Amino acid sequence: MQPDRKLNTRTMILCAVFAAVMAVGAYIQIPVPPVSITLQTAVCVFAGCLLGARAGAVSMALYVLVGLIGVPVFTGGGGFAYVLKPSFGFLLGFIPAAFVTGLLFEKKIKKNARFVNVLLVSLAGVAALDVIGYPYMYFILRGASMPGPAAASVLSSILLFLPGDVLKCALVALVAPVVIKRLGSAYSTR
Image 1 (cartoon, rainbow, N blue to C red):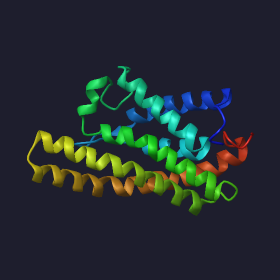
Image 2: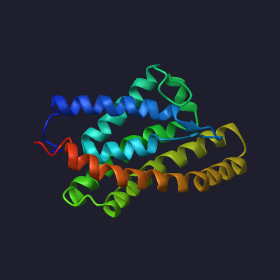
Image 3: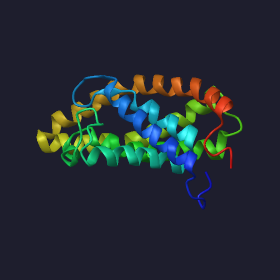
Image 4: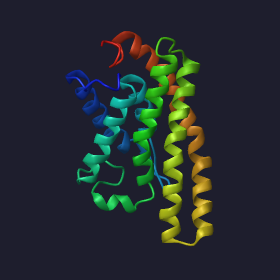
């Protein structure tokens, strides 16, 4: 999407759709402490691939905003008190993750959306997510317990989530090129 352009109606609808799909992805979960495993990572990077940097980030920001105002779209419900949960950093991280994924997709592989390229772009988006999510989780857990157990919990989460994140990115890398080829990306019709 061009940075100087406004969001058109089609893109705004797709942003709302991805925010809704993100809410559904929150409830498809494997509950593990301190943060459940969900399909949200895949939805987030897919939004970046399909919508582009700006609209992908808008869709994730819309999802977070809806949850913060109290609509129970997060894994554990909703409301402003959710900012004190260890998983909230990942919710915030979805915004730059979709942006990074979308930006790299637009700039590097838009015309060559093959599996390996989309996988690498998706993994870069997940890295942006993790840069915010894990430190946030550490600081919330550290406030709730001793520093040692918080660090061990974060480390175990990284080891637990990493294989799943790679699999989710691989799923996006399989699906996104097909969807984009058949439907066109949100920014390809301008």
